Length: 318
Image (tube, rainbow, N blue to C red):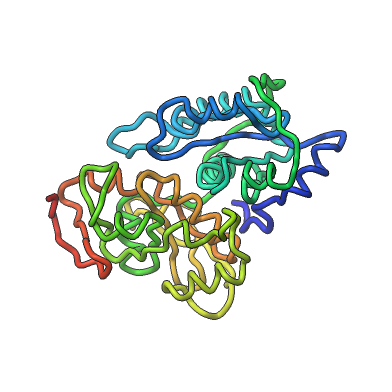
């Protein structure tokens, strides 16, 4: 399994230089926004995108059909492979993923490519907003890239199921990437039940970015996660954790940070991928609970906590 990515981000200036090379990177535009009408990302891509970038639809190509496993479950490995090949992805070429600016959707693309075995994928820090703010060119219209030869194989990143998320919340640190009002249960605009997984710690994804939508420096990210419950001894080395769906719920290859197991979730596994990327920048390997809250609440026997202190209400569904 790949080690912590030493460089999960790329800056605008470096990308611009690489695009002038004989073998430029593959660009994926994955613009998506929770609550936006279907097709909004594709429309934005047709209007203006980084030259050569292919559009990838998060709902259809970076997720499987919504259902008991959540709103954005893992896509089938072969369907994902086919989608990436259509977008021009090759296993031998750098892939740069970007979105409008927050990198939430881009992080989902980054995580999936890494999970399915791509070893050289980065997120454009600040996304299209940073690219255009730097005066870089854009183009309009559809992009039909030459098909790639990416071969997908699952298991490249640590993964949690519901049992694993509960275990990490109890014994380690489980980060909830949603807004505070959703975490506390005061507001839930998407899912039918409000609240959070008991024991989870709220670190909203918005707190991991600066005013321009770029990730905070690694030292500042590390400090934020340490304040939220990780150890204060600097970025420790990861080690393989034990267990599986029948023995604690952590998929094979999950990583513990020092003696603390770390996980992240959100509403449907999109913002949580952003949290995982920020944790990697800070030097921590975290497992993603892909099903997240939208899967957790499917079982009425799972406990729900509400309020900033997260008081558990077993079986509460009001």
